[in-house]
Length: 195
Image 1 (tube, rainbow, N blue to C red):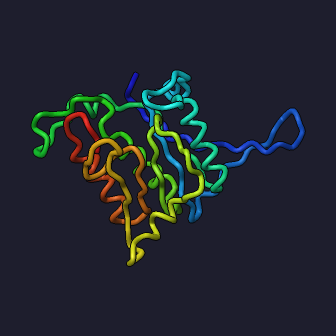
Image 2 (image 1 turned 135 degrees about the horizontal axis):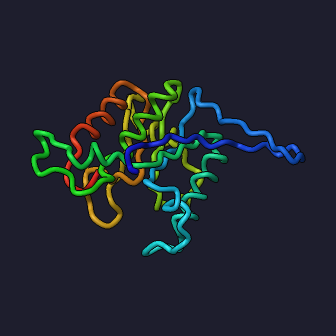
């Protein structure tokens, strides 16, 4: 009905050679969470090949689970839409309104993850159709590039055409400035792109 969003944390099954495997949640204390957003679960498990890629959305989703496992990170999937907030969005900074029902829901999802898990250190958000191909770097590697160690957000440009920040892969630290940036992104969303 597109009126709700769910924040789901991965349950890690422990193989104890029984017919009733035991599950546990990865600790969020001081951790960097891996987060992805989709309006539907079927989008995440679509096996059709992506344009200009050998990956599908399903293999891209699997890559995030593998990355989280390798890094010992909790993994969250934010699912759903909030059409009632999107269809009638009116802001002085966006008199033309929204052109998509998906705009900036990733920002709201990341803010929800920080709200539900205030002990997180940071989040790395990765679009559903973005596959991880190099599992070596961690979010800490990128956050550590700041000489002052006070960076609250890391973003990159598009690989095809330069823009200020591509919304496909983002790192936010769980600080007042990081959370305020996510809240401002949601409050000032506009048109069709969330980058």
